[in-house]
Image (cartoon, rainbow, N blue to C red):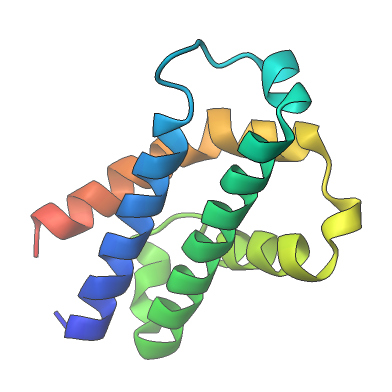
Amino acid sequence: MDKKILKRLYDVQVSIDEINSYFIDEKMDFFEYRKNIMRKRAVERNLEIIGEAINSILKTDSSFTSKITDATAIVGLRNQVIHAYDNISDETIWAILTNHLPKLKIEIDTVLKNN
């Protein structure tokens, strides 16, 4: 596998692990998340990194859309967080954290394991 792609995959993995680490000492509770502006910004920043890394991977090898199910949606989220930050709702980010991030973690871990 291309070294640049491998590095980007590790960037995604690290960002997912960082996001998960923000919830180690307390349960994942939407209302607590919503009140903690520092945690919200940290999560958003890691989602930006994930989106940028996936975008870079797709530009290098478009076949990754078959390995990362929501690859184009991840890039779209990155663009929205960066360029339309005032239209991002806490509910949207929370849905991504609880519904999509665990699946992405499995996919990234699988790709890295099979490399």
